[in-house]
Amino acid sequence: MTLTEDWDQLSTEEKYEKRFENFMNPDIDFVSKEVEEKYKKRVKRLKDVVELKKPDKIPIVPNMGFYPAQYAGITAEEAMYDFDKLEMAWKKINNDFNFDCLITSALIGSGPLFETLDFQLYRWPGNGAKPDTPYQCVEKEYMKPEEYDILINDPTGYFMRYYLPRTFGAFEPWKKLSPFTDLVELPFVGGNLVPMGLPDVQESFKKLIKAGDKAMEWIQAVGAIDGQSTAVHGLPANIGGFTKAPFDTLGDTLRGTKNIMLDLYRRPEKIKEAMDSLLPLAIEMGLNSATANNNPFVFIPLHKGADSFMSREQFAEFYWPHLKKLIIGLAKEGCVPSLFVEGAYNNRLDFLEDPELPEDKVYWFFDKTDMVKVKEHLSNKAAFGGNVPASMLKTSTPDKVKEYVRDLIEKVAGDGGYMLTTGAVIDDAEAENMRAMIEAGNKYGKY
Image 1 (cartoon, rainbow, N blue to C red):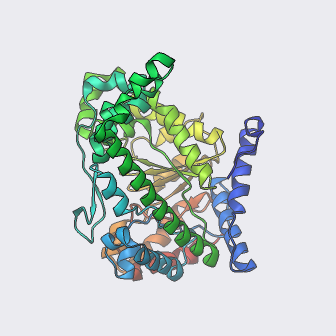
Image 2: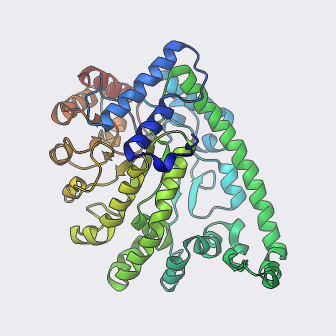
């Protein structure tokens, strides 16, 4: 999607409609007019839910991880390292299951790319994790407490010269670089560029170029895989952009869980100042990725705000204010914040009713939150989805899955504005249980 020259002159509603118009009419050669109409019908279905309307049926949009690899009989490692096998597995699941959205191959990532960069923040299958398991974050104190002010004053510079050298082996020499903002006066340009001539810095740039080649190979592969599945089956992606809540950026991979929780007591004002600096970057990240992918849905996984991580009072002071601003900032530009509430929000659902949030422009989907309570708080205010347990899809029976889905739909979906999805990312499941969820969703989810 290319933003029009008069984009800034458009109202929020006009931007929203423009983004959905482009989403509805992608640059894809569908195999038939019938498939193209099926695609548009599914996009309309998603749009109706966001706008709190009753579509023809409840969209079935699972939260999918590595399950397509398991279903196709390959390992997670093979999915990350062999694009031919990735193609086979993801085309198979999009062909065999009648979901209302694309199961995208783009979320899996490229093992060769991560190896080239010596990515140390994660262990993934084939590099520190078993071949048939998903990836796992390696949490450490990647930002020191005394570095808060550096992050606050220059977030981009901090990531370039502190964070990236600690999490990517290929970027380790970047800690020697001068800030690019020093390149302002002719006599001093040469001195500030001297680090660029150091052998280890130049070697890191060579690795970065190689990583760029790997990234191009990966995006061309997943683009072809997803593009063909969309063209053949009329499947729209339910994720366009990505961003994070400012508190999660701090807590997930900068300070780490233990340290960010200590910071709530030891340096609370620094947390708030850091989030002030990270907020505009988070908004820009979401907008840029949604625009690039021609899809208004911006995925935001919520980690550290759950009931089990912090008190309600801490949520109100530290987590919610910047998350709310992020939601408003994205919606103002016509995007649909799509918030994955991991864990449970049973004790803070009233925050989601905030009157300053845009109505019928936000989508929440839940992991373990009580869905009846969700309906009580969000009905006629925001679209919501959830929460078929991932464990049920692995360990239960098709009849019990159908019963659960029927009961869930009857209790929370009657007024519209609801999508049927899973409570957690699906890496391991039984195919008959997945089909039972779809069958029940289609049977009981008609309006």
